[in-house]
Image (cartoon, rainbow, N blue to C red; front, side, top):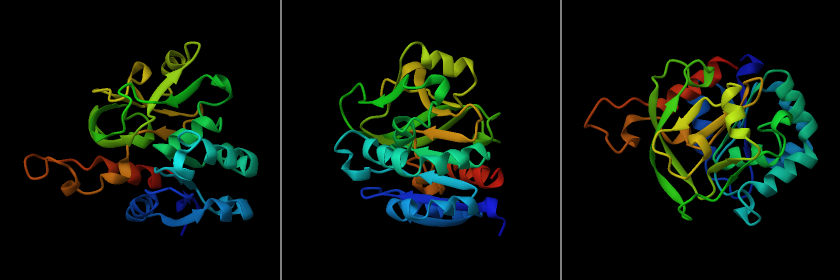
Amino acid sequence: MNKSKKAIVLKAPGTNNDMETRFALEEAGALAETVHVNSFAQRPGMLEDAGILVIPGGFPYGDYLGAGRVLAIFLKYRVMNEITKFIKKGKLLMGVCSGFQVLVKSGILPGKDFENRATLTYNDSGRFICRWVRLKVDSSFFWFEKMPEEIELPVAHGEGKFKGAQESAKGLIKSGRVPVKYIDNPNGSELDIAGITSSGGNVLGLMPHPERYLYDFQHPARGSRDVKVWGRLMYRNIVKNA
């Protein structure tokens, strides 16, 4: 198999979406491997043979110091050089839910042009949210290629509110780095932001869970209408563009 189609799913203590993510990648045609962060730190060179890296959702290290923070620190001080090289080569990195939190709190997103000007914090409701949401997507981003303007995906988070400082949310939108917004904002995210990309477009942080929507029977409206399985299409877009 072409090396670009090899995918690594990064697992830490408390991660709970790694199996679904690996399955989604394999279903889309990738050769996927689940790798524990300790093994990754011992052999960071494994990224050279991969074209896709996904940090899946869950509660890494129990979120005891804040969602995604401990894993972000681990990556920042143990393997950031290798991850930076991976990104500079144009390879694909996606963080979903807590993975998005990891990307932001490690500084990978939004990146140097918006350094320390964004975070993901507690939902306005003060509660953990687990439900389906409507999203407005921009299909000009390859991540959402061949999708209509409105799709649905599930969310499950307690700290999913995107908050920017010094006009950074507006700046990200102006610079074309917000491919997905909430239509029915569940957490109070600034300007309805549900996901952002790097300046090069090959890194995506996404709060909703595409790996939890691979089959029509997973949707609550199954059988009552023409259900489109957007999570499966998204992973196929990822593998196709790796």
